[in-house]
Figure 1: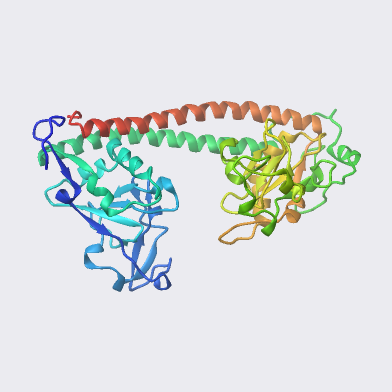
Figure 2 (figure 1 turned 135 degrees about the vertical axis):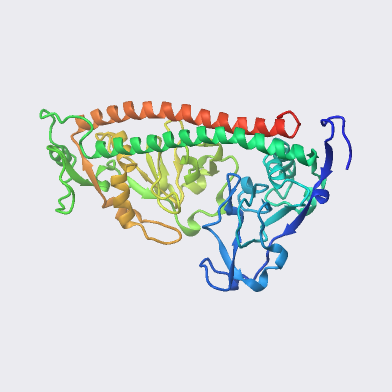
Length: 449
């Protein structure tokens, strides 16, 4: 250990080897593993069990026979579990301390730091959440193998260590301050949940005709549909609608074109080799509509390739719907400032008829009412999916066009208020996260007590 003038009196710089033990994860034959608990099997933590500096011990586990687990690999309270390898870069280096008795172990994608008896385990656990440790992980992640850490990587990690009594005082102070922060965060999370419920209730009321008053002067929706050459959907199993409304198939609100509702090309029609870094035609994926629209993640193909799959073209203003995977049913707009693009197989697009209020359709597709219908045609598998033909047949409550406009105006008025509050809550949560890091920074500089 090396003394340093940068540390308070009595503190020293130390290494992991001097204050703890580094344990490798359990390796096992995948054929012997199961996701169901049984007698004679040991639960094994995986990288995904490390979430928000906590260990998830009651789900997403794998179970293996006792023979694979060495005695020293069973977790003990105070053990610090580290994600060493993951397909998700943001998980690598994440840590969490085992704060309770638990009979189980950890897999090869993880490792464990087991503090020596002379070290306060919670003190060391907090260090592995500190800004210095996060900087250490960022530097290690800058290399080629950004999704992997090696045990040897931790050999270069210097840890500031105070005397044991001061460790205890620092931990007590951290936990007192964190307790106050956690109470505030919990309140903010409750507000977020309430806002989510409120937004859902607004959309539910909108598509059931309860958000704005009906106007007897509005031309009935059925007459408007027939002028478009469409017929109402008659189904006695569907709920009753307000006066002047009618049910219609989703496919009947599409624009007057051959490919009003289509999905992307399948199989060999669009291969990885077709993508270019900077080409002519943007290819839009689910990741682009996850949060607004992320242009930075867009990939491209050439005009030549586009000619072979242009039935899957997407135009500014089209509505996009994810049709496969965990994001199925997610809805987004293709923005007006983007050029004509193309969608892959995991999306479908809807080009809404110009007479219909596009935003009315957009909001209905996000409602819980529509989600119930969508769930009814979705295959319940590990990779949920639905097909476009069945999607076109789904029911949609069609209000008179003037009422659609009034509904959209009221939805946007109410959601804009909720969005403003959400932004404030998000800013406060971000500030809370920064405060946690500031507390840890002071703690490991000897400035907290």
